[in-house]
Length: 115
Length: 113
Image (cartoon, rainbow over all chains, first blue to last red; front, top):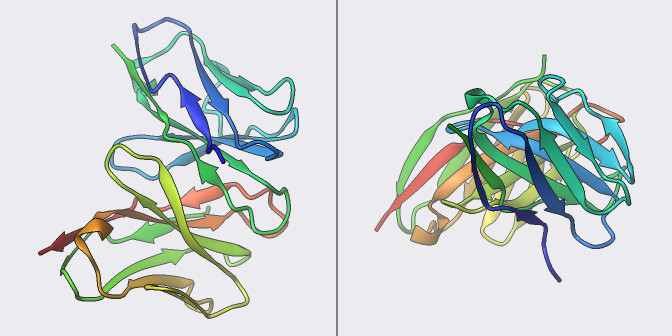
């Protein structure tokens, strides 16, 4: 079946602008995660959804970052007043279970460049 | 706080075995994972091990876990040029967690023909 998809694959924006990044998880996966990967680093956790609710948003760096998952499937990560330091690859992952093995399947990512 | 450490580079010859090492700090992690990332591609889950196991084998991959020393390793037998990639070790964030993962910085494996 289809894997996790993310759009756009690349996004270039000017400092101060607003951006939205979209994630389509694997069908039937109830858990959805957002991570951010800077150059030369491993992914860093941002936020986790179980169904429609944000179960853990402790990784969001500040209040410019917000994410939603209104129908428990597609999620959108929103960044306001973008800064150059927000440039990174934003990864989305989904998982079929909340408890247990937490096998997370990742999408290809959205590369965000803030100029 | 939680931390996952890996060596940054490993170079091997085609046909040799590769061993990628990782140390972690959260002793309550229930699962530990290995992911592979090829250039321009997303993270691919390779294998995982439950914390009450000390070894898991899956075809050419062998995972060893030393829980006392908080040390995890991934051995790739008969390494091929297609195995060239960055390998990430990850731990789940503590017992009873929601499965958020903490990743190391990744080990870049280069396989020379």
